[in-house]
Image (cartoon, rainbow, N blue to C red; front, side):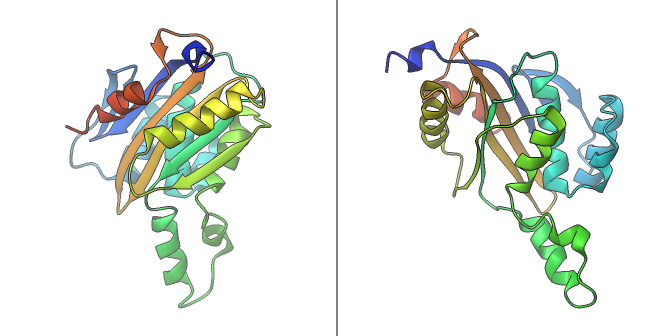
Length: 203
């Protein structure tokens, strides 16, 4: 317990309802009629992401790259920064596309994304991470699971920082909450604070 008190939420991002918020402050908002495809293109352009591989990715990976890019911008992170993600629908959207493609010629470009943890690999490549990573599939946002797993990695010395949270995309509806956890910050890394930060845009 004492060690846990020395861990903090250094930064956090929330993406939902056509809004991108960093540390509770809205930094970008889009028209409510904009679907995910256009949202991801517009956000990429506005944020000047400059990562050509982005355009070839499936939607879940685009969402992960976009959110992690904003979260980690101007942050000092080491190669052993761990990734602890979760959602409730796994890789649902790309799985449907893969099933549809099986009626004709199976597309390797689609099949490669039919696991939710592929997004962790893409984020690791972009940010040059060589670290522990895990993707849980849960019925709903589970702050206690994220807290326990992240604390174990940090307190065991397997990671110097952790990016943890919720990365959901289903039927063009997206719901993202990611936070950077380290030994520096003002917001204690607790179940209550995780639930409060995730609750933004959920009311």
